[in-house]
Image 1 (cartoon, rainbow, N blue to C red):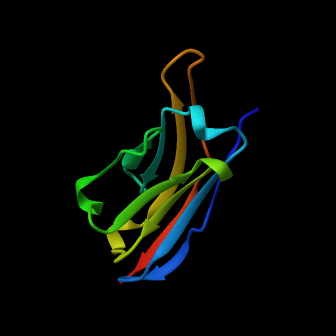
Image 2: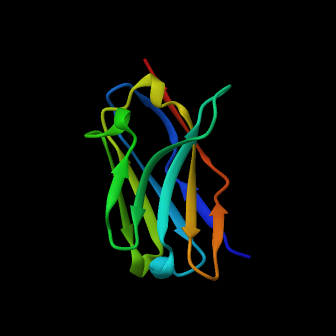
Length: 118
């Protein structure tokens, strides 16, 4: 059973920073994309940032310049550095591991709460 375990969430004031971590029980070297998604109350889950196996990253427009996704293949861990946090960043953040070539898979972590107070 593959596990993705997120950590690093919490309560922070607007303008503050948090660093989320996602530790995988598998080697992420062969994972095509590792991503961070978030879901706020009453809203659909949305993509925040994704990084490919080659290290290319892309971001949701509203977090560009504030969030940075990175991966450490040796530690099988993906990070999301979040700076200049805003109240609208408040959500449960989920880690995702997706492989699009056989054997394909799509795994999710249990989520970590991020709350930004104004």
